[in-house]
Image (cartoon, rainbow, N blue to C red; front, side):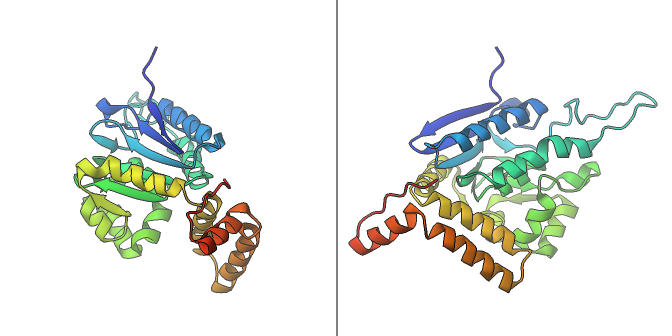
Length: 267
C-alpha cells in the first residue's frame, strides 16, 4: 500500500494536514492534489474541527508543481501537442484555492523551509501564515516562462502592494521569511524550533474563538477589495444582522458582562 501523500493529525479542535512527499520537497502531483482536497473536505465537514493547520513534512513546505508529473511535463516527441496548463489550473489549482478560501474554519499555514511557486501561493491563500526563520518564499514562475498562479496575481498586490508584488513576480528572487514578515506578506516569522509550537498555539486560540465570525471576517475583507465604501458598509450591515442572531454573539456579550471566558459553539 502506497504511503499517504497528506498526513492528518488531530489535537483537540485543531486538525493538522501535512503535505507528505518529503523526498520531492512536497511538490505537487495530481495524486497529492486529490488527497489534499479530500482531506480539506473531510475537515470542512467535521464539526469537531474548528481550525486547520497546513504544513509540510521534512525540510520544505512545498516546492510548487512537480515538473516531472505527466500532467505538466512537456512531451518532447516531435510534433507532439503542448500540455494544456490552463486545464491543469482549472482542474486542480483553482478548486484547491477556492476550497481553502471558503473553508468554514480558519486555516493557518506553518511554513517550514522553502515555499516556491504554487507552494508559496498555497501558503498565502491561508488566513494566517507563520514561517520558520529558515523558510523562504519564491515566486519562481517566470523562471520557467509562466505567470504566478494558485491565486498569486490576486494575492500578492493585496498583501504587499502593486510595486513590490510585481518585483517579486518578475524577478522570482528568494524572499527570506523574516523579510516576508517585515513587508507584510506573512503574519509572523519565528525561530525554526518554535514553529510547530507557535502554529499550534495560534490554531488553538482560533479554535476557541467564534468560528462564524472569523470566517465572515475573511469573506468580508476579501469582498471589500472590489467595493466602494458605501457597498462595504452595506455588506457589513448584512453580515452583522446575521451574526447578531447567532448563539456566539449572545454568548460573547453575556461572558463580557459576567467577566468570564466565553464558550463559543457556532460553526
